[in-house]
Length: 344
Image 1 (cartoon, rainbow, N blue to C red):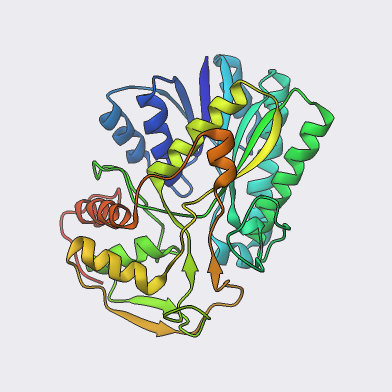
Image 2: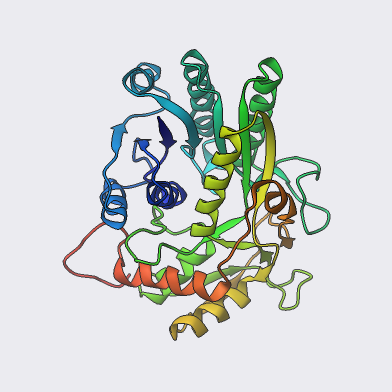
């Protein structure tokens, strides 16, 4: 029996594949490389010393996806695939709704047809909208501030309805906070298209000279240094959370949501300082206008995941920064290899 990993070549997906393979699981990866690179799959094998099946396909292609189920004995699915940029989702909302929601419905329809009812879904802390207080627990009211967040919230609601219609389903909804870091080997890491939307790859690209300086969005929030506070979690810790969730769904039925975060909040400038201390690399920055819809403070209450999944984050900020820098310094252009590195 195998675990289907959709979007397995992506940032979180690739790290989860490594941990699954290291644990002895058989995996089948599907990805269309819309925001990932084939090189990531080669490096997963390099890290683990194991091979695995891969299908290049779009989940919206029902015929191709069903072929995966016809050709393999699949026991569960971990569903990462989808578009993930908040800003882009505001510009092209229909594409986000079509890609994220429709592809999930197609996946679930085929899973049901082949009697595969075990699913770990890659959700997001964006489903909490603008929380009134912190830490954020799973019982907080749900809302969304942008099309990306709404796709995650809608999919959670679809999966809730699916379970109500058929109690044989076992589903974990994993609400990520802010993934950072990279595998300790430096072989896989976050490789965003264009200027990064997330803080850590933005910092590390400034550090490597690819970008001139970091834009810090706002310094008038009600925090110690005026910059926004977030819960940053090492991507390997996040990957291990998926393994714990997988074990849970394979041994029980039901649907549950879990926060995956450290329970600690760090400001933007605290992360800049931590990066400089961990790497010795200075990070110039400029304060620019705050972005509309950004919460001042956002961090998790991860108690439920610890209690029910036996999971908790182990890596600290120093390791997050050091591992991010190792990845970026060894791969200044991400997975693309260029003969000459030109500062831009």
